[in-house]
Each structure stands twice: as C-alpha cells, then as structure tokens.
Image 1 (tube, rainbow over the protein chains, first blue to last red):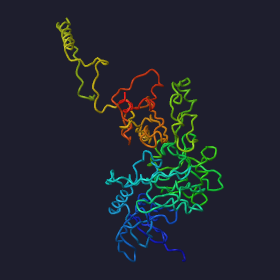
Image 2: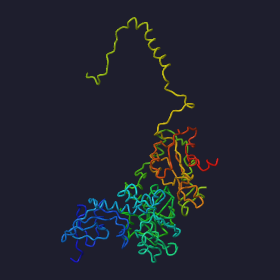
Image 3: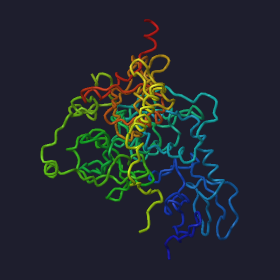
Image 4: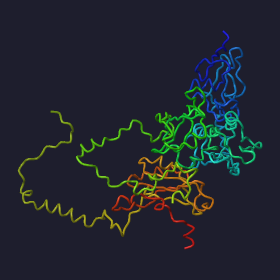
Length: 365
Length: 169
C-alpha cells in the first residue's frame, strides 16, 4: 500500500477517517454542519490562505494515539494537520467559544458599522460571525481606523475601512492572474490593500476578488447600491465563454439581471464547476453580460432557508388560472388601480441594471 | 336527555296578573332607566372639536426623519421593507454626489421611497427594524381619501420639514 494512510480523527465526538495531511478544518468540514469552525481568511480554493484571522481556533484535547497529551493552546484548525487518533473539540469546548467571541470582538474593532449602506450585507461572513459569536456592543472607546477612499478601477469598489486583512484577494490575484497589481502596503494598523501607485485592476479574472472577499471591502461597482441582496433572486445560469467556465449565479429582479457572481458552495466559497476546476468567472461574464439574452437559465439556486437571501422567495407558487377566475366570478375582474401608474419605484421602462455604476440623483429625474 | 349546561331556566307560562296586565308599572320602570341616562356622563365626544388623547403605543401615519442638520436619515438599507409583513414598502437607492452632502446623511440614500398605505397594517415593524432612526409612526390618524392612487405615499409625503429651513422662516 503506497497510498497515504487514513487517520482517524474525532471532532466533537464524531469520528471520521481522513487521509493524512488533511487539516483539522477540512476534516471538520467533512463532518459538516456546526462542527466546522467559521473561517474569515482561510479559503480552500486558494493555496496558502489561512492562519491569519484566528476565527477557526479549536481545542485539541488529545494530540494523537502515540502522544495523547493535549495541545497546550488553542490551535488554528486551518493550519494544523490531523494526527491519527486526534481528538478535537470545536463547538463543544467552552474555551473555543470564548476565543471566538474574543476574535470576533477584535475583528469588529475597526470594522465600521455601516451594514445598512454596505452591499455585502446579507451575504457577509463577518456579519454571520458577529451574529453567531459576537457581543451586542463594543468596548472600544477610540475612533475606528479610517482610510482615504481609493479608486481601483471602473468595476471594483474598494472600501478599505471595511477590510479585515484576510489576504484572500491578494492570494486570488496572485493565483488567478498573470500579474498582481494590488497588495498590502504599510504595516500594523496602517496596513492597507492598495495598488502601487493608483492603478486600476483590469486583469480578466480580477473580478473574483469580489467573491473571495469575506466582508464588503471589495464589491461590484456595477451592482453598487442598485438593490439589496435579499431582494434579488439568485438563479443558476450558464453561457458559452471561451475564457472561463461560464457557470454563474445571476441575481435577478423580475427579468433584470442585477449582478453576476460565481456559484458559492455551503462554506461561502466559489464552488467547483462541472469541468472539475474551481468555478472562477471572467470579468466579461461578471460585469458586462447584464442581459437575460446572454444567459441560459438553469433554475433557482439552492439557498439555505435560514439565510436572509431566501426570504420572500416563495417556492411552488401557483398563479391563479385566468380562465378559472372568469368561471368562478362570472366576469372579467375589474382592476381599480395599476400600481405602475402611480408608483415611481420599479418603473417598467427604467432599468437600473443597465446603468453603469451606482445610480445618482440625475437617474431619477 | 342530559342538559348541555346548567344555565337553562324554566319559562313561566302562568297567566299574567292584573299588575302585569295594565303594563303601566313596566312602562314607568323602562322610562326611569331612559331618563336616568340623560343625567349620566356621555360616552361619546364631539369629534372634530374635541379629540381623545392617543395611547402612548398608538401607531399612526409614517414620517421619515431628518437629523439635526436637516439631512435625510434613510439610507435605503431595505430592513423596513424586509420586516414589513404586508410588503407595503418599496424603495430605490442612489449614491450621494459630493455636492449633496448637506441633503443626505450617508453616502447612500433612498432616491425613491414609497409606502402603499392600502397594504400597510400599522404594525410598526418598520420602525423597529430601522437601524438609522429614520422611520417613525406618528400620532396622526391616516386621512381618508376618495381615490386609491392617493394612498401610495411617496418620500416627499412622509419627510418631516427641514428644521434648518424652519429656523430661517
């Protein structure tokens, strides 16, 4: 047997076998559900990511079969490999939950409370983390760190104040594009994502940094302020694209395509496409194909029903049959008011999704 | 047969006595109740001139709030619309321009904001959901009207007057 041996690992009293070399986090994700620790910086599809945010801390109560001593401190599960007979406590450990609470508090120290303005709200990992593990208020008494707004191109909006320094976008640019134009400048509290000097990010696959960003630091400028995530309906679609796999998720409202993203799996990461590779999508698919005729619709995306995105999406709706209606009431129904005649929201002849960038006051004249 | 309740009473079918037959005692008894009510406190009020006080939890017509500098507080975050059980609230957001900083508090604002008052049930869920203290239910009864069209309330119908303008006037 030349294959790598399988290790038995027990996570939250659930024993599974994983190949040697698997990280604790990946093993916990195989168990699934709430056992998997939350992650902010680790991204399984990006090599070298992880080990920065400390949200995935777990307690190792038994090192291995040969050396059963527990590890002295909590370990970052994304960066620690499993050993045979290892016993890990994730959500069953008081220490871990307390540590996550602390890490969440630290991540939120400098994170602005602008979720009402932020386009990421509703699909933000930090929002979910804060909801699950955070405190209601902050104990921080000083001003939050702020940066001058920086323009990094026509398609991607950078909000440096919201950044939590996970380095995911740097890894994504490094591994998906030929030349990386942005990175971390300065150190410590001054560390920031930036280009050197004031370039615009324009590689064909650079749009994927939007999907990779766990918070709203990098958002889609073509979707900026157009709609809230939970009012749009996610639909899986594909197109023939010679640059990328062409398998995307459209965020629609009526027949308007408001936003195009890659498909995400249950961990919020870009899912594996049908060709077996990670389903990164190119900038053309993401930013330019905003018309329904560009896409072949496959059907509504599967969204967790606990997510705010699935609110208001009624499944299995049966529209009343017009013929039946006439039969029952014996006459044509009388519409006393058409909402479009009076309402100024969602006018049928105004297409917000066709406007480049966010709408301004002139667009509503 | 067993009775369902113990409240049924036997009807008295014996012939009426003389006192009952002349009816006058019964009439006087009824009239005394009627006249007695003239001297009691009235349950009604003369509405337009006289108004009842609202209960502290009364929820009436919506207003959209401004901050101390007269800027609109609403950022079109959509939480009121998502909280609304009647799906009465709709909005469209826009980005604030650099010369509009005195009009809107945040970089995003509601360019359009509508409440369909035909749908609204005045539950106050929007007021509770608002993270920016922008929408409130005031102590005003919603006025009646003859047309359905007039019940689609636009942002201008609900915004409170700018306190800066009022001071000048």
